[in-house]
Length: 68
Image (cartoon, rainbow, N blue to C red; front, top):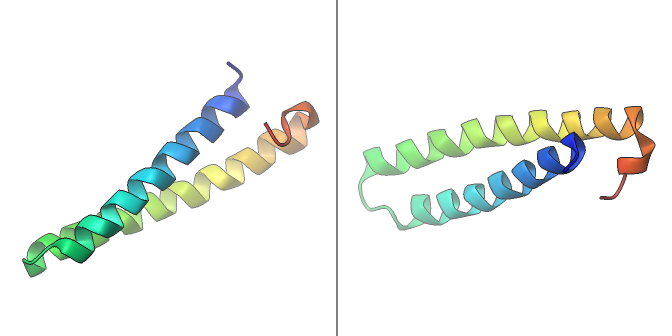
């Protein structure tokens, strides 16, 4: 498995985790718990953004990985 495909797989997993965190945040009854989920959402959002930039760099460096 190439580095690009590993990064893309990690990115897809994080996006799925982010969706789960959103559901948990919506279902949480305790305000402190909602805040914790929202904080985790912000962190994963930052990581996702960074990984998306990394994917672009990898695709520019190695065009054969585009779209995989």
